Length: 394
Image (cartoon, rainbow, N blue to C red; front, side, top):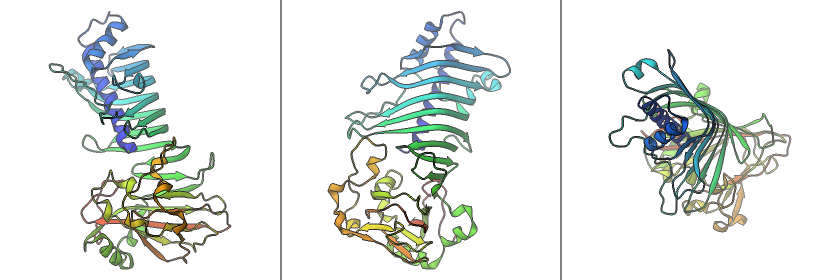
């Protein structure tokens, strides 16, 4: 499950809770004790909801709900008691829709939320929360701006026992169109590796603590017309037609790797296909091309590919306790002695399969090793990050 899907899950859960809160509070006695209100909310959501701290409802031009110490119970089979906790939860509700009987959340704020998204051995998910029992008026509301501070999301696969944790320093989400279409601005970390998402662009930083050096930007073609023009360059496109197996091709994704002198980090053995397989139904038809922007040598951490690995399809990932372990290829399933260092001059093109096991070593030299990587696909399919379509020649 990708981070955007996880965040949407969190937002839907919180939006459903807001709707349930409003419906319950419009039907219970406002002189009731907090325990009676939370009991009614539990009935409305189908999960036990507790509020250990303050609970406030404010009417007026800007109705709002705030609570501290919020806890939502996990599925009965879950690995821990609570699916979600939050130090503070606040929602500003639009007045006019509320008068009309609709719940529209203008602003939703979560401070220090912790969410676990998990499945059990049978593949059942814990995020199937029933917010609208038969006969209830509660429903998932329209949601405006969402702000999250200091959050944590744990992903647990009950079948493989693989666990990952995403730390969210800050997040701002705003709707950009129909329900389900959002702009994400988020800063967080995976395995302590810092990243920032601005819209559909991801910026990764070098792995040393507190580093401000950028190592990867994805995608980049919209940042400059010359980068966009490269997508249509026949020296790239003609070989790609053969590799994709179609005369009409489109861009899947593109990224700029910036391997800085003395600081550029390496990257372990991996395939691209396991990372993309959940987002594309034609992962076998996503070939890459690397355009070397500097001379690449073993000294400055050139790309390395394992000979013949492209013929074996998606291989199993490493099983460890790291958050990104599953994206690295298990050493039991390829022969590292078959690695080939691809030393090329600036301006060279290297085409390789999404199934090819590849990686690189750090750059301890005084020379940069920068590269632009473009990935193509059959035409008329959306790109990985933006969801837009960029056909070649369009």
